[in-house]
Amino acid sequence: MKQIALLIVLSLIVVSGSSAQSISLKKNQLAKVAKVTCGFVKTKWQPVKKVSKNFLIDKKASVASKKACSSLLKLGAANNLSKFPDTSRVIKVNAKTTAKELAGISSVSGTPPTLSEIRTNGAIQTFWRSGVISGILSGTPSQDQCNEFYSSNTDGASGGFSACYLTQGVGYSVSEIARAGTTLCYMKNFPKREVSDAGAVELVSGSFPGGNIENLFSVPSGSQARVVKVVANQGSEGSSDIYLRVNSVRQNEASGDQYKYEFWACEGGTTPQEHETTRITAGGEFITKSVGRSDDGNFGSSVRGFLIREAGKLVFDASRDRIAETVGIGSNSNRKSLITINSSNEVSSKSYDVFGSSEPRKSYSVASFLGSGLSSLRFLEGAYSERQGDGNFSSAIEYRDSLYASAPNNQYLETVDRVNFATDSFYASAPTLGDDDSNISCSATADVVIKLDMENEAMRSVASECEGDRIDGSIDFCRSTDLQTAQDNFRSVCSNPS
Image 1: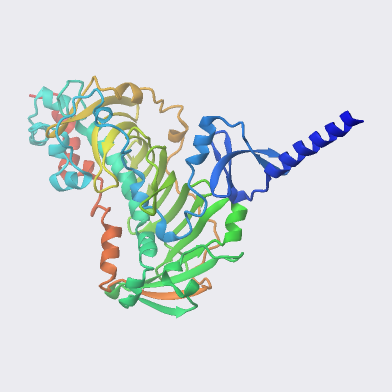
Image 2 (image 1 turned 180 degrees about the horizontal axis):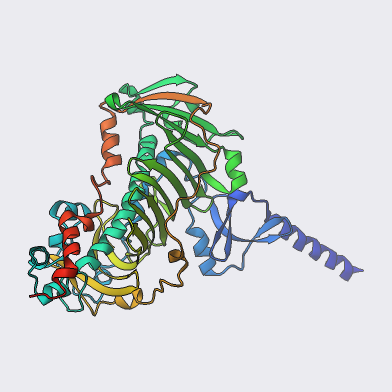
């Protein structure tokens, strides 16, 4: 009898101990990292395992699993739009990468130009040696000049169009992401007391949460989303209506998010010109998708990447992969791209370009880079592979003192040669922009309506931040008038060069 009683007591102790560790977690308190399930318990992420309908802290979790969970963004870190990262900074260096790792085994020398500097100085002197383009334009090129017009296998010769397309392709993708995020940048930066006190903001109806303008885009308590309408007055350029719908606490709990909003912009009429949906998941993954239309055509972009906190704000974690996609549909050209930025400060880019009735150009590139964001982006070295019509070619480049030169022994050439344009699913279909089937409206009822004076002095610092990482003009610097003429001349003057 004593033995039976002892077993009963021990059983009760085990059951009591197990139930003491049993926890009930909402959807936004759960996150996956690789194959590890993490739960936000009290104040931190920990490995958990599911038992029936509840969870238990996994006390037998490996050190790697614990580290994976502890790397997640803390729940509650993303509670206001003002803390959101600038999407153009999705491409930035991993500061933990050493200078030796950056240098690799290449012969890179000198300081490569930024994209803005390439636009200012011209692509010709950046990607071609002196005399190559002028020789083809004059109709009297040498055999060597013809050989390095597109690309060359001679070390130190011009990087040519191969180098130009590599640089332009990634720059175009990041530029489109920056453009898509500009309006939203204004929205996250204007709700400040100093801007309001300067008279830039007029409350038309509704009220600021807690009586504080800085809470305008904070997560609403309860179950109802908050819809904010901003009438942005741009002086002689007229005004535009901008809407933001911020999900509530209960909605985030149900969808597994920390923060989620929907944004759309209307400039007269009933059809929104731009629409974006963005969420930060429970574990801190930033996921955004936007579509829009402009005078240049229709565009779309998406960005994915994990976030960390730096100086009280959220930034992209450069130690993890970040992925961005863009689509541009114009009157004479269609483009799509897929770029991946890794922790080794390398960016790989798949591109599909169609210009007029020409054969589509399918390309793949890998390059190492420096900088953070569009304005400071510099490429050190890389390789490029292209298929246009029935022709395939690949080449590698390195920046050497004053231009991007051919580097046939570069480490990245083997990487791009592995791509198969015939079987890779990205290249299976031409660029298209999916339909936006959401129920957004340019006459939506808003909980808060404000007027924003974009010409107010207080908005200048906001404008400086939001416009600072954009490049005026087109990134399409590989299609200048001289380069287009040289391409037209190439077949005739290089069939029998002097």
